[in-house]
Length: 156
Length: 103
Image (cartoon, rainbow over all chains, first blue to last red; front, side):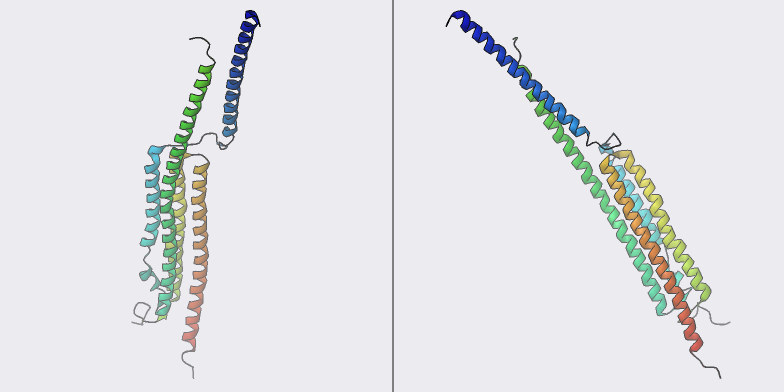
């Protein structure tokens, strides 16, 4: 084999490696952007989705205010004075039991709403964790892109 | 002065029944429903100020569902109570009518 053909083979192989690397990098980018486009389809119809983490305590405060407002209805109803204008005797007790059951229903509802404060807090936490994980994935992907780009540099 | 509901240990007062029903309706059931629904509107606004997206919509929808459920329960229980009270009042009236046979 002549020196010229060896040099020609080396040059050809070098060009092939460059083309292979560029092709791999292009595939990587295409896959990455294809994935991003697919993920965009999960964003809800409103277009924007996000939280204000600083506003979580304000939301919890609003929920608590709401609970106290509803509880105020329970404490504000003086059943003893009211039923005795209509009934005296065991029937009055039966009516009072009904009112107690209504109050119990409202109290159970308020308890459920208070639990929503915890749900909101958990949702906000998970949102932040999810965003952090996504950003870490992007950093990792960026590193890979940088490495891919570095490998096709032919100038020093 | 004749005995009235205030001084009685057993008894029923027809106008008192009506006032009691109105009281239950206005000051307990309707007041609760009003506070539930008005309060919910404020809660929706508070949520929108800090949280937007599918999860926020589900959160608000869950609260609305709970309010609808309890309002329905209150309305149904009020209707049942009002019917029961009226029925009791009528039956106590019958008891009174039949306590002493006229000669």
